[in-house]
Image 1: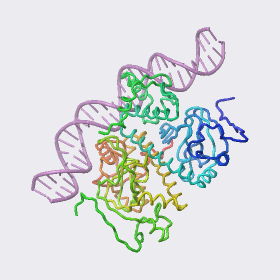
Image 2: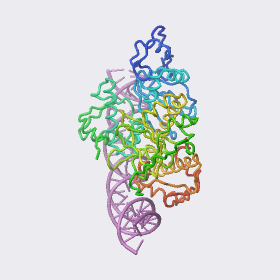
Image 3: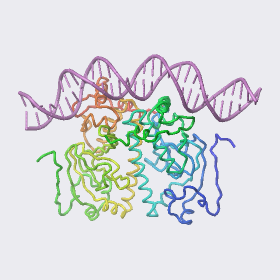
Length: 243
Length: 243
DNA sequence: CGGTTAGTTGAGTGCATTCAATCCCAGTGG
DNA sequence: CCACTGGGATTGAATGCACTCAACTAACCG
């Protein structure tokens, strides 16, 4: 099957579509009995690496929940200038935020991605109907706001080496949170994508990784790094030094 | 009365505390009959320019609604490095976002500020009790997310002149929205604050304003600018040129 | 009128970018 | 099995944009 086309996988789990879902306890799926899960569930879909899930400015369509893979959420200023606001991991919702009935961001698969797909109407109705889920949506938005604010500060205030250090620390924390291997630490996104996230050029990212390697703080490899000294890396990031 | 102390003003409006409020139709106060407004209302407080409303990391206390003045919401990396994430205007809520039961951001008065003060428990209970207000809180968080994401892109992707242009355009749009004078456009925040917002040094802000003046796009004055050519300023901002 | 704070201006520096050459690796086809 | 190819990553040199530093000026407040 061609990788250039988006794969549609109806996944006809007639009985319990969520029974074996690895992220069914996360976000809006949490705390569901089987009935509630079945009520929310609609369909799944897979996306090849680099494919677009939703485009900023398009009429707000479905909401997605990531089952596997990583999605880059971004704002586009022009063809050549893109700001990746966040990298989303399995269990996270994306495509939810809208402005004037349109997607407020762009979502793109960084790795091969599998998502649940919810029509917005049903998603909103469902989360509105259950008090606990309304609360989940609200707190999730709060966390996102905190996260994006922190990242704005990273981009606005830190030197390149500090930004990269902060990014690696953040990525490591994410991997640990999801029980994934941290040594070596996989870097599934391209240097370009890292640069678009940190407000740096891809060459600068490369230079900085080489510099961190030279300092023996990390060991940079292809598609991965080994963190040799997490405490120094963390100290470099500028987020743990209140002085 | 000393400006260095925070002014407490109980404002004993025994009957209708919100009757003459200029922002009573904004945000969580909208659509209230008198009873509902009285139910939500607690107290008001004024803050001298430069004073702290809430500190990031402090246990999450009251929620504020700005009646008059401008509040800078920021993240602090160290004593000397601060990122102003947003400038809030009358009618906006601040101090709402929390992380682990603590204020996620710092809030500081840029101008003299008057706010309504709501205890968090009552605020949450009140907004949870009314469907329309739950919706208001949710959409407000979504807008904020969009705004911060856009600003991250501004800081991460634009040149200094573009950032300043984007900031001036944004400020002008805000003033217009609030029916305030736009020529001249008041700049109530210091060069330092603008720099902390845009990820620039205060001298750079000054240099850029001088450059925009030289280009006859604005006329820079003390505490204000006159926008001579809004379309060129807007084009410079990088947000209206999809190429 | 002084003293203080905010803002301006310009010269020099430095950090990130640009440009360009090279390398690595995966995929493909001979 | 290996040469070829193309995209991603690395590296280094040169450039340039924003920062640093410092002197100066303007506004504000006693």
